[in-house]
Each structure stands twice: as C-alpha cells, then as structure tokens.
Length: 248
Image 1: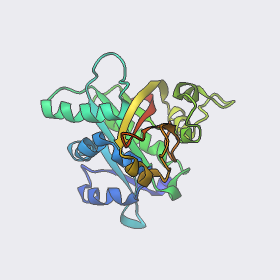
Image 2: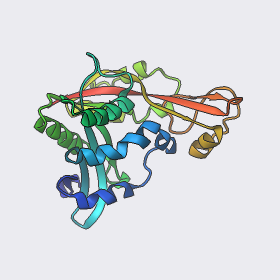
Image 3: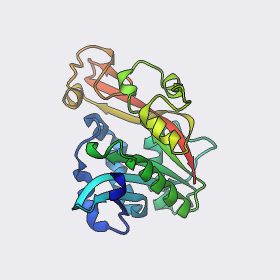
Image 4: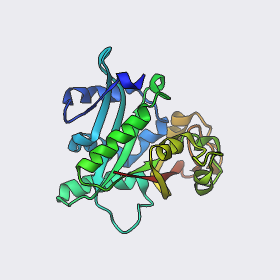
C-alpha cells in the first residue's frame, strides 16, 4: 500500500540521490536522446533538491521506489510555453544562473516502480509537489503531462485526444485523469514539448523499427510519428504534451 511508503526530499535525504536513477529505464529509450534533458535535467535535481523527491519503503531502506521532480521558473509571456518540458527545464536553469525571481513551479517527472502503480502513490506525489510549490510562494503547480496511452493512437491529433472524457467527465487517458482527479485543470497543449533528433541507426536502436522509408514513421512508445529523411540519415521526433495546472 502507498501509505506504508515514505516520501523524502533530496534536500533532507541527499544520501538517496545516487539511488534515484536505479528505478531503471521506465521511459522509452528515445526520451533519453533529448539534448535538453541531457544538458539540464541532472542539474535540476541538484540545484533544486528541495523540489526533488524520492519514495522509500521502510522494508527496503535505501531502495528508491519512485521519484518526482519539479523546477521553479519565470514565465516568458502570458501563456504556458509551446515548448513544454524542454522549455521549463531550460528556463529553470537559466533563471537560477541569472538570479531571476521565479514565481512558477513545473513538475518534470513522476516515475513509479510498476508494482506500486495503481496504489494512490501518484496522487500522493502530485500533492507533495503541489505543497512544495506552495512553500515557494507559487499559486499553482503546472505540469507538461505525457498522456499514457497516446502512443496507441499516434495519428490522433493531441488536441482531440486530450479532450476525450469518460461518462463521469474525467479524461479518458489514465495519466491525464489522475491529474484532473487530483484537482488539476487541462490548460492547453504543448505541441513541441520534447524535440529529439538522431541518426536512423540511433532510432533503430531506440525503438526496433526499420526506419527505411521517408516520411512519418510510427515507433513504439512515441506519441506521434517520427519524421524520417533516409537521404539525410535523420529522424526527428516532436512530442506534444498537455499542460495541466494544479492550484496550490
């Protein structure tokens, strides 16, 4: 049960920082090819240790069962950015370097070991991030949400997919539904939340797909098709996410 698990910030438990990546690669392999994540994400978890959380089971001390991260940032303009995840990661580090005042907090990741999913732990971690945002004076926690089942329908426009609801009015997508059930509101789509490019050899290694034909190519785990140019030996993936806002 999730109630038996304890949640610690890395500010309080820096000894768990080295273990938080031991959850394994629970995301599609191509996600780790995002250059923005490669450049900035690790620094977010150290610079903002008070916004990075790990979950521990008292029965398995030192073993991280889940992790959650957020980043403070200053808005550029009136709307949450089209650039979604990549934008707020980059802005958060830029703001810290420049000493800029930050009035927003964005969730970056909630990753849970498969045997703890469906236990209510996700809602606990959303609440933890929301409380941490409130402690910084933010009036909301925002999140560029990666819809869980969108990869099953890669050709469906993200706008239409995000608007689907069940008879009870909650989103049809499980991860969007978790956020909305926890008090979140869908704000808008982030059409360019992650941009990942690689050689066709890299894409074959990441996904197992052939990538031998020009044009949009469906790949396992991808929310939209990868754009392939065989002559240039290039595949480009532009992932859309959905901005959700949680009041603090």
